[in-house]
Image (cartoon, rainbow, N blue to C red; front, top):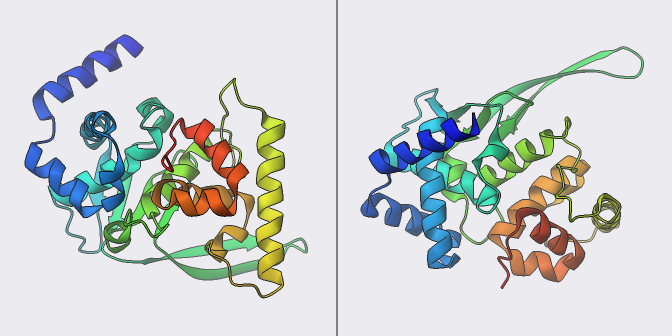
Length: 251
């Protein structure tokens, strides 16, 4: 299967590799991509080409999903697996694209068995083995060096889900320590919650304090989109993400 997958991907690159014009436009649209060295850009270009062919993109609610937007989504999606490979995105196949933020119904049972229902406005959403849902407007706003990247955020959730739950604990490489990862992330998560609880304004988006899973996803956004800030605020978290993603964007 791996041999056939490799052969298929080579054929995709030979037949459909992104044109220089389209790729350069993608880099200009998301300024953080321009910080990659030339070798990394070419590797990302190949991954983007294959991702765009292997995944299905479905526009809904009137979203205009042209080749340019599809390529931008694919490029941002491939950034976290630049040095990991597309097989880390196994088990799901579809990206649903709304024109802007969308409403998602929520339903939970509390500890007393009472059903609570509400609607939440979202810019992106992921589920276990299900599709990734994105707002086109938020894709356009991603990757500008502000620390915001909705595509990276949802891809981080997909990586997290490889261990079965969105809990901020993706499958680590054999060279990494799960004990160290847990300790570093828990300490930073507790610190952010304490600062917010004290009414302090933080340079990290407060949404990161929602759950450990959101903390991992939001800090992954900063890792790729504003790595120097992340390294200044939570150096040890930056180091763990550097080892996990096998990239060092602050350098």
